[in-house]
Image (tube, rainbow, N blue to C red; front, side):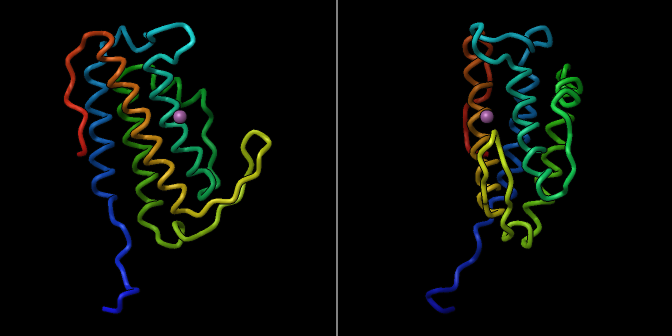
Length: 156
Ligand code: NI
């Protein structure tokens, strides 16, 4: 093997497990606390979870030219079971993207809030991983504030 040859980073399996930890965390949120937030100007559980799912679909919309409306996601995620199903389905979509080397290597151009962007598929994948972890921590913190025991924060 030449010194310049290297394997591509392969963390898809671990990310899949991370998604499972988020799905499992939803079980710890009492059904009647889905719309709870620590204070008025912070998102509630439901908003955090639907934002996470919508962000996945939003970026995948670039590659598959398929748009899903935020209201549809929000409505489908009004219950814990609905949220868990939405997490599974959005992950399946991300997984297809991660498993397609051509998509990962492509450049994606678009516009968000008036700002144009140009990102490689690998950047989008990293962004979505970072985003999943970021919002998983919201769930951990909210559960702690509600004094609900939950699994330790860990790398799955
Ligand atoms: Ni976010």
